[in-house]
Length: 177
Image 1: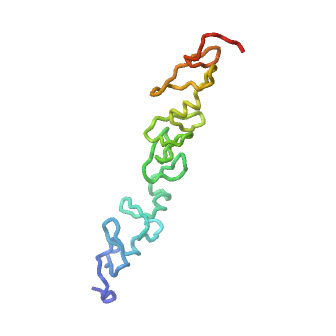
Image 2: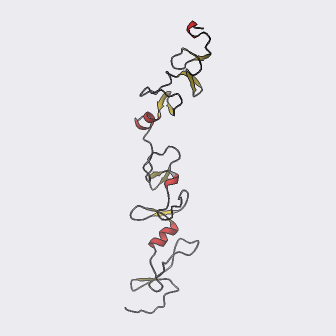
């Protein structure tokens, strides 16, 4: 034992420099290995990483900033809805990436993860029922939207003289106004 460290606890050898680690608070364990605090640093910027988030790739250790933004890690996914990085689960829809919590109906804000959805000409995402309500033609007789019946995705309508009617609202008479 080195005389400069007499009375200090010996914890083992540092994985990076192979020198002895003595004394509490002078080293850290990460990835099942022992490091001096001064040796557990980012491979790019040399920031001390003890007690901070870090990433390990191909044996190198990186601070969060260098791993995500310096090109070490493949380009991170950015949410098409909120614009923030996606750090966990990525939901892919329409060739774009989303946080699952951000992929929501533009009208009712219902999560559309695993749900049927549709998109309008402005690239807004809707649950099917809200899309039908917004885009459905209105009946020329009763003025109510012509919607699919419950459990269906299609609706039946009568088109006469460039006007839309519910089947039950169409009388067959042509009234020119």
